[in-house]
Image 1: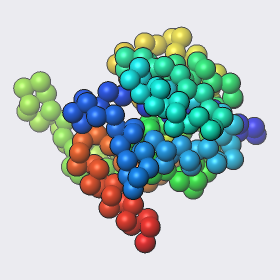
Image 2 (image 1 turned 180 degrees about the horizontal axis):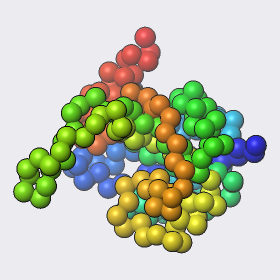
Image 3 (image 1 turned 135 degrees about the vertical axis):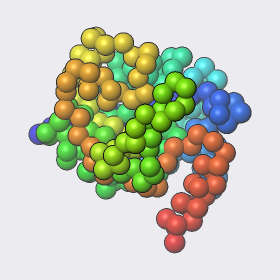
Image 4 (image 1 turned 180 degrees about the vertical axis):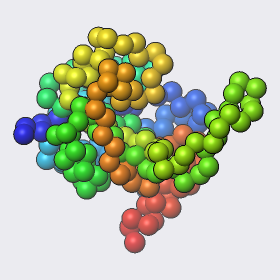
Length: 222
């Protein structure tokens, strides 16, 4: 099976919950966060093309950072979903791997798990079992039910798709309410496989997450 893929790194966020700071270029140990996952993807055997989706404010910075690499940098949209779609439309390979730039800690082992599972699915996503008790509430903030944790996972990126299936989903369904592209595959009754993600593969959303990432780097270095 030919597993050649285009990797799409989405780095067009506005950092609202970080006070407008561009999270992709925050430095950890002197290296921009986006560079951590980029380096892993750039070296990975099945990645034949990398497309980085950026916004108007950081696209020049991105072009400077990656000027010595064979990558394509494109302008994103107003939402994450629009930005990811822009990357997918530029992709050329049979598979597309969509990854959030602000999840720096991915590994070749995780990528191996994802690519191995795609043979039986239309999409593969990494997920972590939910440990906390999760309750569903109504509009008035009263609990309706307690959900069973053994059927819940916390989803991460990168997410891998058969490109033709994802393009078909884009044609059939709107993207204004999606939080990841796997939702589109679900809506068309496609097969979305979950593989075990990495606890360390957290996403920078708030300043507290930066503290966690420093601890992760310390752990990995030791």
